[in-house]
Image (cartoon, rainbow, N blue to C red; front, side, top):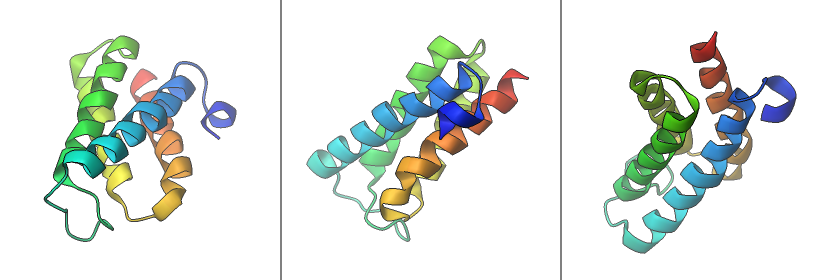
Length: 105
């Protein structure tokens, strides 16, 4: 969906957010997460922090400013925290792609 909606590198950033942010958040959250965030459907603090850090690090390679990378990381973390079950596989790349595109224009 992100590839259809946004130009490069915003589309790539959306896909990277899904691959690295959501993937690592799930893996690390299940392995090390003990404190569950309320109203998130079982998401953990460790998993959400992992999502933020991984997406921010990838965004540092794509966006020209540190502030932009932090904004993209925060937006990915917030989108990932919604209790949407498997819909985050569509929401996350589309939302992060939009935020990245808006920061680039």
